Length: 405
Image (cartoon, rainbow, N blue to C red; front, side, top):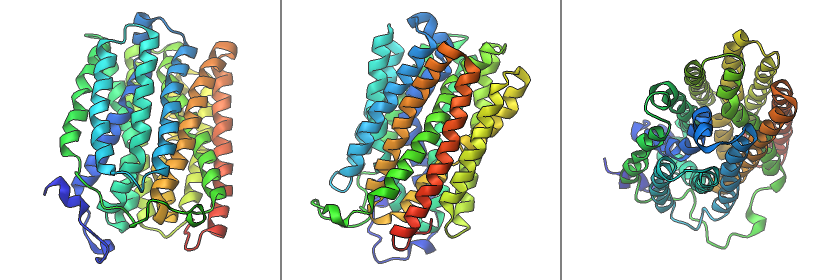
């Protein structure tokens, strides 16, 4: 089957009756992994990178924040123009650019400012890519399996941290951290050739869509706030977990394996949420609410600072705090089907903005008041995310015809 077959017109067929093809979903997760590897490799390898580039925890937080700031801007713009652009070309261009960024970090990032610039480019790539990938999934995957599909696609983030954590003992501590970036640089080239050449849009929408035709802004903005609060806490957690474990007395190699272990939990949770979503009708945002709240409890476990408590805290934080993202994006697509690109682009902009504030604030909190205070802030952010998503769900159900919540 050629990649162009994914673009076949589906207006007159019952997409819910078709079997799910594995290639589109595997392609989507591969593309998503390639786009987020630069930032998560930077977080996992921070202990080794800072020895060469000489930066502090707040500098790490700032570098991660820059990635998500540019992702937020590009995702918002990409979402608003998603009905006008060739999404297949966006995906293919981003794959080439992603390979170049990884190659650049592995070769020319000889000081902190260069690293930050390259992460800014990587963030722009990632943000531009997300609405196009979401549209690709909504067209290539049968509707009855889209919960699983979005769960697997969002599992790209914990899978990226899995690879990043695995790179600590196997590459960074043996031949050097730069080889970890160089080793994954070819992925973008591979997925460039595997990517579809065209994607049939969800609706044949005119280029000049009137603002009045768009869905109500209030629920989407509230969803963006909830996603931002939750994802900001989760990305701060992922960026600083290795550094915190080393601070608590763990050896760097074991701390890297901690991310590997946690990433497996995160992947399992996201895929599991997707499978369950396909088996029920509605209440998707409700399940996301509870998952975010339980994740907050996981962050609170880190406040105690005991080395032996890190493993169970990691399980809860990865499983719940990171487990609801795929379910959340699926729920947005399901409740705003006609404007999936616009809605997911806006919501993921909120996620990226939260991910700017989260790691940056966490890094400053560590430097000024220590890890316990920083983990407390992460927990509060997760609890606030749960409240925001619950409010957004009520707005969606009251304002969007046919919404399933």
